[in-house]
Image 1 (cartoon, rainbow over the protein chains, first blue to last red):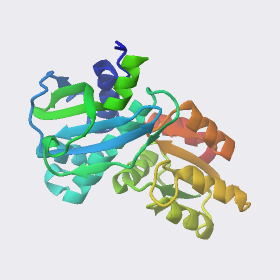
Image 2 (image 1 turned 90 degrees about the vertical axis):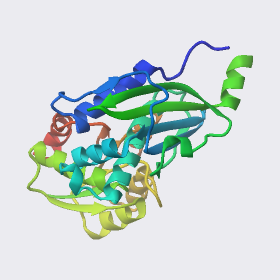
Image 3 (image 1 turned 60 degrees about the vertical axis):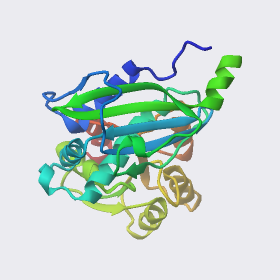
Length: 162
Length: 120
């Protein structure tokens, strides 16, 4: 089996750092603190699919509070001022940004989908025939946030037999 | 100058607007399009001086908008702000006639670097 993970937790941490410094924490005072807690709960999530030379999903998940804080930071508003539409839009954009950066790490010839947003826990969505290959799990000002990468089992089988 | 911001995410259109302001380009006339087809229509009807476009949009992708504009003889200054940054896409953008390629996430400094030569 291939030992090279196409997207490592460190890669995801670097992407998260850029997103936090650009939009969520420009002052650099409230970064995402990794905890490695794969079992941490989420209340909302968003994802993009990558298909072609590499096939899988990139999933952003967080608590509702963290999603509202993210929307507020993106929109320069207070968390209590943001609408559900704002929250959905920001969750989609976060999946799109991270997904686009993940796509840059996979072999050329892949396509990125438009984002899907689900205002329910990550466990509500199943990715049939895909396995999680890496994940960044952490807390942002005490709230759970995660980014995970799921790869198609068909892709993984190809790697095993290669 | 008139600037058309094309992105299917309303939040991202607001962030592009805010980042333009932070980079010192807040006094330009800004118009927005929410998908590729609308971007194409507005690039024709509104006659912007600059189009800042997402790549991945419903109806038409940003590069399809650019190619259609160029095929119709419209040479408006056009570039991309996108989360996707593969060499093949940058090549496609350049080949289609894009003037710039900004990768998300971006900063006001990056906007300043790209847009100062264009907007003055």
